[in-house]
Length: 227
Image (cartoon, rainbow, N blue to C red; front, top):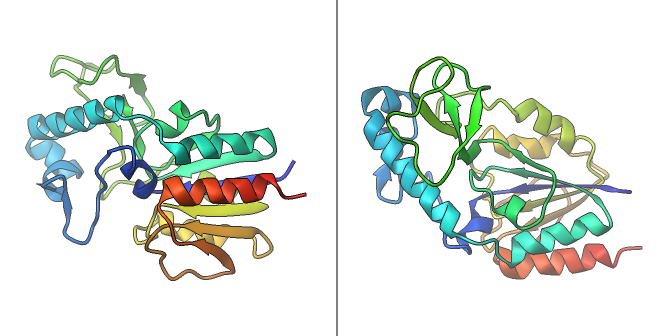
């Protein structure tokens, strides 16, 4: 069974109604990232940061997997599928994909403020001020903020190095270190890129300049028909 590794970004979730972060203007839904997505922001104004992610979590819970998420799950019928996502939502899982590695955390979990490895599922959409970890300290979102290490990066690189087929979906490959994962993909691997605004990419990628809900089903149909 061939191994397919797919790197997904915000573009695949945008069509489910989730706002994307674009680092061009440094804003995320009208908030400066320095105020809501850094360790310094958490220390300076934890109430604002918690409120911001509670609202994002509520949006994620209300969102539904789209045709792209569901199409990717079909690949499991024929391939060993591994998703590596930059997204903090759980739409891949709800779309039916079994193996999902979250590079930047997942918003439906909380974590200890002193030990990122200590995480908890969140019931509902809100982390309350009274919610604490096993160390007795306030819980924070299980999200990798700007300026923090990406714990799953080495594992992601190892997974990419074993790909027979590799695809990039819904990402401009502008944010590092995630963008560097393409460097670990074997040169002989079959490669796809799906995005309406395809970035310049090294390697022989088959490019599908479509939104995810159109381009991903096209890619999946082609892969399912391969001998």
